[in-house]
Image (tube, rainbow, N blue to C red):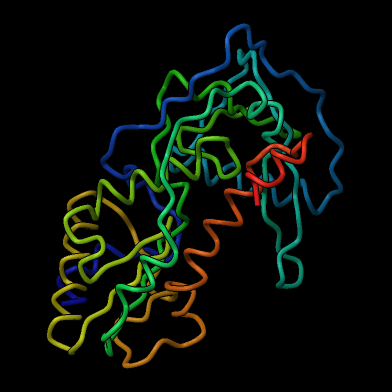
Length: 268
């Protein structure tokens, strides 16, 4: 089965097309003005990393050089756990303030966990570079333009941290896996959990998930997947309890700070 669906897996960036779904189209609030910033100073190690990372994005069609952009948001380089490795983040707070957010629903934690009752076989899957697989509508690309030490690039894919990014990602999950969700498969953003009462059924669910990934062009990271287990390990519980608990945390982060006691009670 895994050999048949080998093209579903990736361990590095490639020139793959985005997931075959309607692209995210962001709507700005009425009267919103473009975001403008000055270039930042970066230490040599950060510039070296940016050169490599930005070129990788350009080479694979995830971004393009845009010297005429009216928008620009700052890029921030943060260290990863491994020594001398970095990650590029983008400060989208100003863009988010100008965004009219889309509506979305969040999976109910208690209902989702209740579906696992009676299960004894599982699999857990993780997307490869989740948000970089999601298409951004051409009309919404310029507002997410990124200022680097070499100029401005404009992404063609959804950026993590955008006001609509989480909601849109979950909409994509619903589109790709709709026929099987809550019937042997649960998914929150880029984490997928399969469950069944016996090995035959769980492997059938796994094949349905892989077939859906192939159909929509969704890529998975093989190093972060566990294709069969008879118990939920700590990592796999991320696909159950923590996956849906993360939904609560991310939703609360997006809520404005309450100014009245009544608002605080509604937000808790």
